[in-house]
Length: 325
Ligand SMILES: NC(=O)c1ccc[n+]([C@@H]2O[C@H](COP(=O)([O-])OP(=O)(O)OC[C@H]3O[C@@H](n4cnc5c(N)ncnc54)[C@H](OP(=O)(O)O)[C@@H]3O)[C@@H](O)[C@H]2O)c1
Image 1 (cartoon, protein in one colour):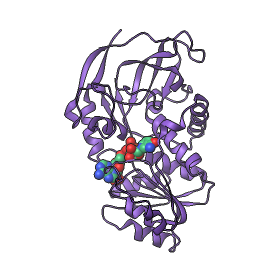
Image 2 (cartoon, rainbow, N blue to C red):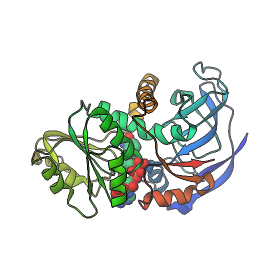
Image 3 (cartoon, rainbow, N blue to C red):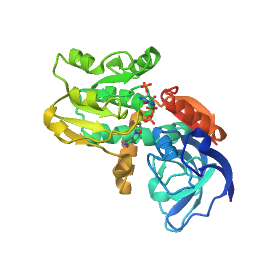
Image 4 (cartoon, rainbow, N blue to C red):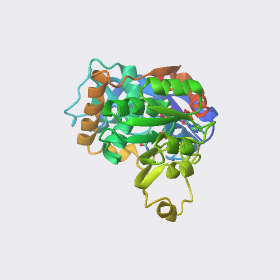
């Protein structure tokens, strides 16, 4: 079957993104073919485009999507043709009208969750699930710092924290983003483009600092984040929106108070399949109860994926973004 899909032949800026016609194979024994209805845009897609994270070229882009099962491999028992499905992160190549991928990475989408919501929430929402429920299991009543709180992952984190009874301090770069994070349940916001976020955290906690900091911004916030953590607390460095954290001397963790450090990734939290199913169920349950609403604030035609990348990198987007095939 032929379909339109995004390919990159070289690493670089948004201009390396091209829409081409590809052959979509029939599913192998453990695969499904999906007619895609919506595709999630994520910062990780930028890392693969620039080469910060790499895959042999040429390749497609994108990890997150939702659609209708179109064909099923002979070993696949839990999905059938016509099922509404979504996935957070299987093989790279979600930016496509139709795709074939491992069935084990795909879950059924509840009837009340739209394709767009599914495509916008799977990677980002399951990331918040593991950050809040596995990496540091929040119990409620903690105060935490979450960087880029008005972003795709960030607005879900604000709502999840509120649902758990956790006070989330969110950093943002504009008054509009601050208002949005607050509206989604952030306890306090800090505009880190103007204010010293370490000083604000010390004030907000009466000098006590925090048990855990979730940092997806990376290079620009690394040092300050460590200064916000109480002795023996946890630094969760989970992204590189401002650039990768490199050259860290581990002694810094002793100097800052016997801190723990982890650099987790979603990929290791959705295998085996039972983990993916359990986490998805927890996420869908919160969505169906109305505790997490997925804000799709930007939509772009698949053919305009390059423009979507440029806007995400330029901090022009808020909440989730989908590409429409
Ligand atoms: N490890 C994992 O499992 C995992 C999974 C999903 C996502 N992530 C990470 O989580 C972070 C958020 O992902 P997302 O897809 O939801 O993106 P996003 O938060 O919607 O966009 C990134 C945000 O980072 C902030 N930022 C700070 N400095 C920046 C800079 N120099 N350039 C661009 N943005 C900057 C911007 O918010 P302000 O303008 O408010 O500063 C921007 O909107 C990313 O680092 C991503 O890699 C990690």
